[in-house]
Every structure is written in structure tokens, then in C-alpha cells.
Image (cartoon, rainbow, N blue to C red; front, top):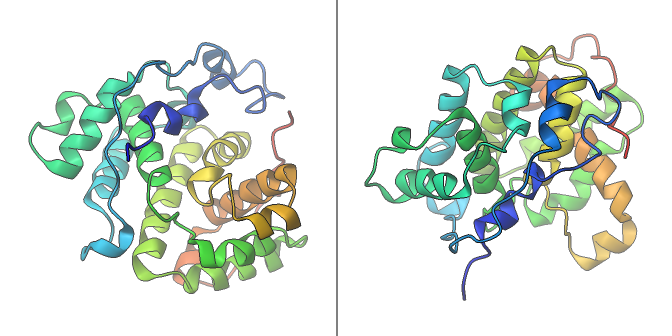
Length: 252
């Protein structure tokens, strides 16, 4: 069967009034109104399962996060995909996964951001795998920030090693990019846009019945935002310092 078109993985870059709705003067908000995915797209080849590799994280994730870090990518970069031609994204991913052309020939920070998002959303099993969806959503829903971080620590610690390390690399990349844009509101926008890269928007029937669509959206946001704010406690077991200010989910 044919794989879904890459454009389906790039919907985050289409105009979405939820991101930065309260910050209409920001460059992210100004850019987003122009973002439209390419209508026609060749089929995107399947991404290998995380269970198939022997390295700590997939080479594609390592290369893309490293590229974004070296390019000093900001939150604007992660959200501004109007300059990322989906065909260039396809070419970069193919070069990383299957060899051949140098990925730097087509890569720009915007293309790399789009490629990273497409890659993790295209994994056969999401970074937080299906058997842990419910635990993750419940942990993200803890009302007290300290308890939420500790609950997320337990879920992350229970993930398969390659899922955990890949999630750590992605969260580190997102947190650094948001920090370059001042953190806070920038991280909120990033967490809103990238939440479905951790747990898919469509979840198994029982979970969909237990958690409504809007609730799942909020929990995806809270989970990713908390992990990005507390990288060392969540992923390295470091002691939890003073809680970071609670991030507000961007309003619709």
C-alpha cells in the first residue's frame, strides 16, 4: 500500500490561528498566515521502526537536530515552513535514510525543521508508543506542575531505550530553539505545534472515548511543554529545581 503523502505530515505548517493567537505582533504570527502545504506530493517512503536500529537514535534525527542546533534555529524556524518546499523535505529525508545525495545540498533550517517533524510523525510507532498513551496523557494532566514532571519522568523512564533517547533529542532541539526566541510564549507555540509528534492526534478507540479531542490536544501540549521545560529531571533523573512558570496553551 502507498504511504501517505508527505504533505499530510506537514499540516502543522498550514495556517493555524491557534498558534500565537494572543501574540499577533510576533514574527511567527505574521509568517504563519502565509503557510500552505504543497497540494501535490509524491508518496513519502516509510520511516523505519525505532525497534529496527542499533544506534542510540536514528541517523536522520541525529543529523537534523544537529543541523538545526548549528544553524541556531529559533521557534520561528520551527514554525515558519512557507519556504520549505515539500520536495526538498522529501529529498533531504531520502538522502538521510537511503544515502546518495548530500542532504546539505537541499537543506535549509526551515527544510530541516519540516523534515524532523515529518520523520517523527511518520514513525510506525510514535515516540510515546501505543501501550503508554494513556499513562502519558494522565501524567500530562496532573494539575500540580511538580507532580506532572514526576509522572512524566516515570513514563519516559519506562519507554524503550531508543524511543526515550529519540524523544530526548527532539525535546532538547525544541527547547533550545524556543530559548533562542526568549522561551515562554515561544515554547508554548512550539509545544502546541509539535505535540502530535510525541503522541499522535488520532489515538485508539478506548482512549478517544475517555479523553475528548480538545482534552487530548491540551494534554499533548502540557506533556511536551513540561518535558521541554524540565529536560534534566525528566530524561536524566536530575533533582527537580524550582518549577518553571506554567505555560498557557495558545487560545483558539
